[in-house]
Length: 95
Length: 199
Image (cartoon, rainbow over all chains, first blue to last red; front, side, top):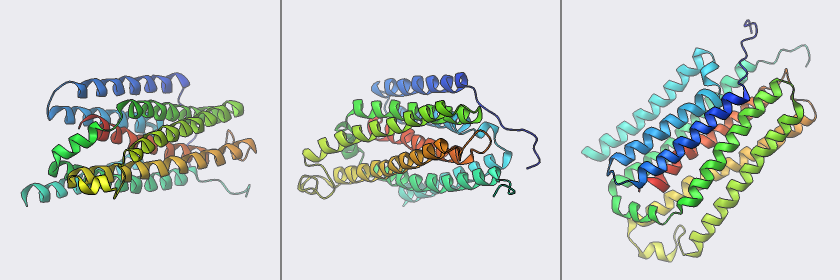
């Protein structure tokens, strides 16, 4: 590799902060789904889960510090999955 | 081997490509879940209420903590702290065992109540309930297998660290194993709300 020393080492403090954020979000998702919000609690829970995965991928999995190629293939995978989900629901709902 | 540079970029890229196939695998299971949820909302609701929120929430905390230890172990090995790396890896493996222990309690309580795939109780009940529990066992079982594989890989990595085959300058193997472990955590981040919370 031509890069000099592009290795990012995350500090323990930063990792612990992410962990605390993940625990707070977990508590939030339990609280928000105990309230009667109807369909919205599904979206709220999924939104929180997405934020949590974003944190895990960005920091624990170092994605924030990886070359752009990694992010491109991540989005290709996510769009593929979204396409499968969208296509399936188009079939299920409008059959 | 010493004259060959290890291609850590390629190694990590390969690991990520593998992880994407894993995402699509679990994505398929989640699609099944959501399709049957729209078809049998009432039965899924009844099924979901039979799951133990305390077990689910505890396991979420256990997995998030194991992920923290795994991420910290990468920092530790890169700064040359061998003992700390081994301690953190043991922490992750310990969390894996706690997770599996809780899963065992959870499953055996359900099986004790006659709830398992093809059990007489589920066959006699509404089809939606039977589908819910089949998907529950499929999803958490597939996830559980990943936890076991992750723990085995983590133990093997710890041995490599002890032998200093993985060290401050050559540690992409450890990084890749922790990436796998984080994926296990990621999947649970979605299993928990879908099965334990929203129903």
